[in-house]
Length: 154
View (cartoon, helix red, strand yellow):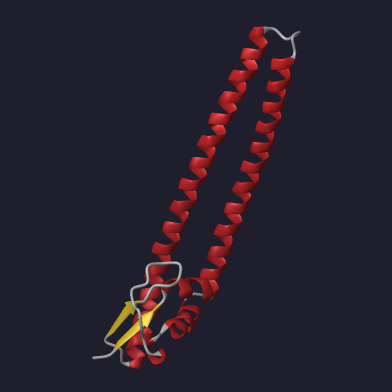
């Protein structure tokens, strides 16, 4: 009975297709962060206007109230946009992992069959839950699976 171990996170990170997908996800996240930062600057500008309006005795109370309401609405929209962004990014990450786990399983099956392994266990990584506390180097199939993954999924 032969047992091997595998770190799927490393397969995603080191495989060509996986690293491209992670780079695209990172690029998407950075683009959204840029939008959020620009909107934050606009909010800061509105906040400065609001402070100036409050100290300006010439501005009517009604106009000050309008500026406060405008700021509050923009701020709420900005917060919602940030929450939506986090949810969207989380879903994209989840979808990516699900898609790649199927491919990793396929590549792992081929490597395990080729090398006579009966079982392959997800050993986890520093970033995920560590399941396997010890394994001999010869039992770690991660690098072999990366090669097989690259061969199958260009």
